[in-house]
Every structure is written in structure tokens, then in C-alpha cells.
Length: 159
Length: 127
Image 1 (cartoon, each protein chain N blue to C red):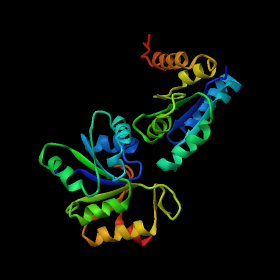
Image 2: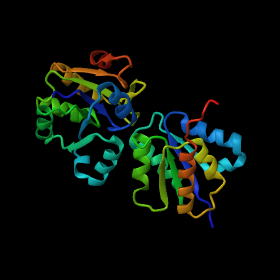
Image 3: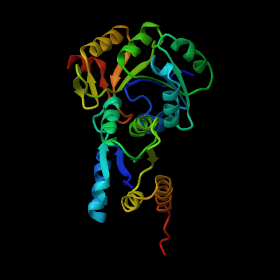
Image 4: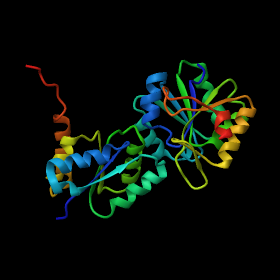
């Protein structure tokens, strides 16, 4: 079935995703798209521990389409996670986000980032990536938890 | 023998509050615990803060949720060092037991605090 959620969150699989979004979406499969993690077996094991009973797959950005295809044709209730906006923008460039909503869920403070929302700190490059996704007709918004206020992408880049 | 040190790593204000509760109940024995919050910290920053307080010697890292940023940071930090042990599902009874038994051999101490934490969870009849 169609992917339930595309989310940008630098913590990837963590409490808000497993508990908050897990309760709302009842997903059973997570596809983590991250070039570094796709090559690190021990870190994959850690993230699998964090996901509990759910199936967790790892993919590079380039390999995402191939990893996603079987999950969209079976009964999997899948969410897709990337650590940052650059990877999500790359998925958009591959045409994988047509008709999808991209959720910006968590980016903490770091050099070069400024606070846009309490849970979302974005760099100039991040804001450019939001613009690119919006220009491609992809619905982008920020929301850390399902019952939080949804902040549209256009508002984020306008702040 | 040096005493085992403890780190409480949890979401929001939970770690600070738990260590404060231990101090209110057990007094200066709470000095054996260091609280760390994940509030406003990305994975790298949280891992760096945890590594900084680890130091030398044996450390038990108590975390609230295994399936969370705290659990991930702890498991990642302790992965290559047998002197660093992660205990998930932290509760107050296990911390109180820990601070009074830090001189035990670490294997015995871990069994003890885990058992204490589990035994503390029980339904209580109204009558």
C-alpha cells in the first residue's frame, strides 16, 4: 500500500516516531533512507532494537526506489525516514514523492541552523530544499507529533 | 574497589527529576548519579554529552525508553566497552537500590537493580 508518512527527523527511529506516530498510523514497517546507515550493520541493529516488533529496512538514497517498490505492492504499512532534508529532496528528484506529504519532524540546533520552530532548526540549504520540494508540487509541512499544529512549508520558508 | 557510577539519561526533565527524587529520599547517596536530558539535543550532541560524563571506571547508564533517542545514544556509547552497561526502563526503586549498593561487583549489582525495578511494578489490591 502507499507509504503512510515521509518524515525528516535526524533521530530517525525514536520515541515520537515509535510511540506518537506509531499509535496514530499503526505502521508495521520502517524504511530508513540514509547512505551512512545503509553501510553500518551494527547501527542498523540498534535501530531495529528501537523499533520493537516492526520490520525495519535500510536503503541508500540511490537504492530507495528498489527498496520501496515491494513495500508498496504488499500489505505493508510503511513509513519512510530520512535524517535530513537533502536526502528527502533527492527522493523527490527521483519522483518518489508524487502525491505524498513530507513531514518535517525534528532537526536540532547546530552550527549554521536557525530555529524555525522549537523542534525544527533549519539551515539555508534546508530552506532551499523545502522550496525545491514545494516547487515540485510536493506537500511539505512541519509537525513533530500527529496532534501538534501542522505548519505549512510555505510558512516555514517565509519565516 | 571503586564504586560503580550511574548516569540517568531520559526524555525532557525526567532524569533531573528522578535524581532529585533520589536525593530527597536518600540524601548525598544521590551523588553517585548524573542526570542527562535529551531536551533540545540531536543524536550527536546527546552522544557527546554522554561520553563526556562516562569517564573511566564502570558505569551503569539508566535510560527511560530503549526505543528512543536516549536508548540509542546509550547503546551506541556503551557498545565497545564492557564497563559500560545500559539498563532500560529506569524507575525510582531501582535507582534507590543502586545508590546504596554501588560497591558490589557490577554483575551482581546489575542483577540486583533490574530485579528491584521489576519487583516494584505490581498491582495493589484496594482491600
